[in-house]
Image 1 (spheres, rainbow, N blue to C red):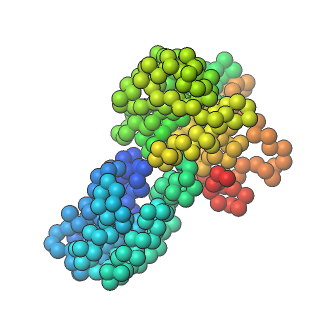
Image 2: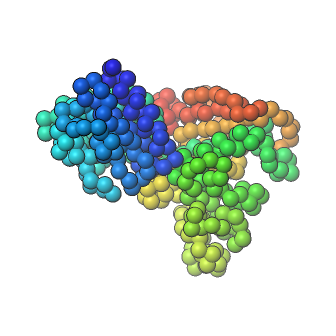
Image 3: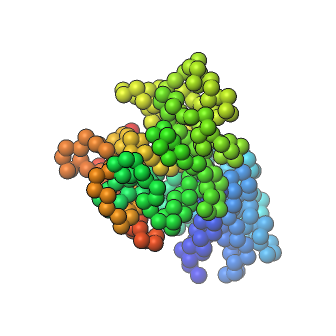
Length: 371
């Protein structure tokens, strides 16, 4: 078998960590000796053993003299776990094949240098594109200092997310709703505006698939969140953060704090609303590497206008409403050449619905990176 074939196995293993590894990357490892696979492993959950450790522990026989295939450069620093590069050296692995180098400034080729300085042969960039695609949120977070932002919404064929009276449950099918819960499990945080809380009173937890509950973030500039809102329930299982422009001295700030919810004050933008980029910077400082935005139209419009979005997942139901609430408001685009440009990754069906999964491209053709 070739290096690429073994690396494909490692990438398939890495994907098993989806919904649990973040904010760490998904990593898989395969150990080969004398043409036989003797060990496999992947990073199962943030804070637990890395893929290399699990693969070595899984190995049948001694790994000395073997080749290790790993989807991301082995770490060389101590965090919640010891350095994997040192472990590889200690077990006298002969060769290490790496898909992608690690953008984490604590690693960033230092793991490779550690291995090579110990006399280990290192082969790089084997299926690097596939590895970076698998961990696009991690790489974006490390390289920009901001969370990878996904906008997801369900709309009718004529682009409405609700009727003229605000009714939106349910535009999409049960299959699409399950997909929405899967997306929640894959992100570190889920964000909605206060309008969505007041209109729909959502729970914003993961219920239809297996996975962790994301941090629930409510953008509420004026602190209109009711103290009995669903997002303020089960805070031990699904913590909630309210982002506001109000100060801790505000009576409503104190009233909401008494429920156990956490509130943070974010500097306002020019319209006196929470500045979303500043909010994302605060979330990044707390190791939130990915954010799923589920609405409403005002928040979606704002993040698109500010080029803060990297991924767009749009569920289109075979329904027509005519007059209703638009999914996206005025982006102040007056010339077609300034339209938001999408790179469509895939289009598929869930029941009667059509789903488009796309990435937003900047003017240079790459995935948008906030300025």
